[in-house]
Length: 404
Image (cartoon, rainbow, N blue to C red; front, top):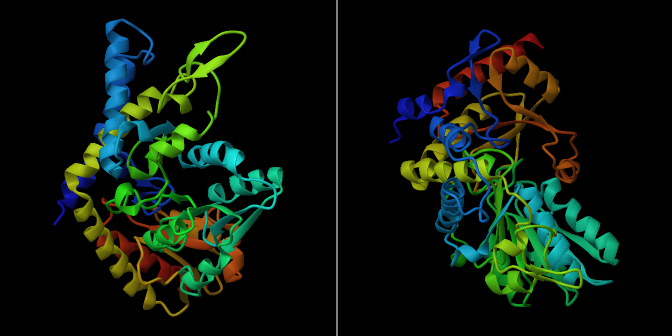
């Protein structure tokens, strides 16, 4: 059992009122709140040892570099990469996917080739592939899903051809909460030597991730989803693949030697980390991962599963409410519609009671088109949420329906 009272005290933002009501924050799929230790780690860097990394010979530079690289080691352990050389520090999931699209993709995708994604992808795992395929004269193919929001595996198998050069699929849907069977997808792809990228933005906060066991070729996630700062993320890639990929950006740090005639590039992982990085936020990410590890991913998963089950049962008791996404395996995300009430209106009325949910298409417009809707309301839960908060949301929804 988690000590929820203690955990909630770790997050200072929760100790406030919004519109005269205690804040109930249920928009964790968009971004999670930050514990005080993460905030302290960020301010400690700027107050105590602000310096550039990997370049200076003085004490502050040495300390900053040590802390910076400690985060890379922490990420390696968090996802069980085989070495720190496979951990590329980026601005977030979006940049990490674009890095792969513009390096591996540009190098390997030719005219007439194909990239496979799924119907439930976030725009950040659609648009980069569309851009590179349009540039190369290639094609994006889409795995269909059933009405429960699950990939139809047999239909996915039919999409694979000798022209398939890469498969990029979300681990967990930010809209439906569906946990995709990525191991099964990867195993099928590797029968044909097709590399697979896994978008882990929504899986990394909720349960244990083991990239070696999964055998994915790339895995990406964002700091701000896992209780860390914004503007910071991770690309994992198998070393052999990363070594063959060209650099993404040119500049300082990613070079070994520069002359006006020729530049030779740095070794992994620095080849992909041009310029001054987001040092403070990177250092604070380690603190966030340490915080998650201290609580325990298994404990977090159990707590969030309880919240999902509890809220699902409560929502099923509301006659005019329909849940969008009823997969057998889900994380603690529930998208829903209420007959006769626009999601935006619902969100505004809940906000008036201090309850923060997400409304809209959630950067997944093709998925909305699949279900024939414009958008949904979405409640998403984290380690600091409680059943009492769900009760207050449900009670408010009942009152809103009564008003209509």
